[in-house]
Length: 362
Image (tube, rainbow, N blue to C red; front, side, top):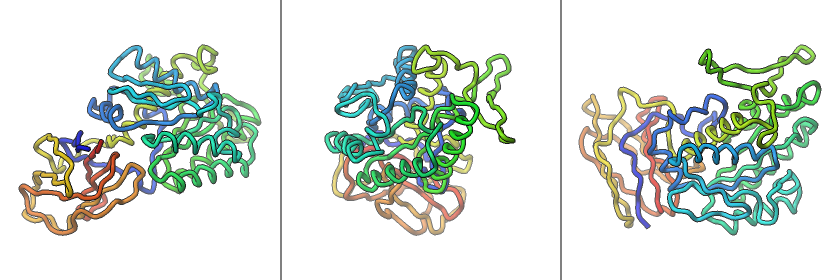
């Protein structure tokens, strides 16, 4: 194994294991904002499992449309299998025995849970797993959606090296069914926010459309019993692919790339002016321990109580690297006992902001 893809800069980040988790919505649909480094990192370090029915196919269609227009976003989607294509973001689409995956085939029944377990057990390189609703949230009760949340949490306990991604249900329903879906989606959102989960907000992406004439996002809503309920934007009415339009699929595909780039380590909050810079890009061979040199450029003479920790891709702390005071200049981080995967080195200076860099071991 070797250590590759080390970031050139430390970025300000709200780390994805923080109190807010990660929410992917319509504001996460601009591929031009994602640095090329993080697209490459997704393709070299993340493999995903995605199970869904026809509505969920909007995401797979979307990433394929994006790849067709720009091969930089090389993505290999394998039907009932995990592709092994170098340089591509590889996705296992479906379960091993079926490509049309309802709740009973992923989380709702013992047999469905076993299908999910089989994919993850037989493909140990998978980093993420997610399942997309069809229209169940239009009619499901609070207890039924809670069963989904409980099942996902159970799977997280069984597969601690896999990041399970939660989704809201699509926003095509209106009237009373749309209102019920709105309540159940909010139940999912609240759970994810309270429990540090990764949420792909499918319904939000359904209800917002970017108007090129005004360069503004517009949300479609309706009123039901005094409540403003978001619903699918009329611009997406159609049945071209996955019960919607090419445009809607493409926006969801963009959001998927955004989400994976964040999970690979991209910080969407940008670089602070007071940020510490790493002056060189390098590759080192894996040894025991690994030594990573860095250049600490700071404005003060001493940084008091600088805490340096390492986390895996699921946000679990894998250990403390250092905890103390550092002078400006050259330093070396010593890391031992890492397995294959993506890790984040978090550097905290005692303020409310942490910096980090990403390490990929392959």
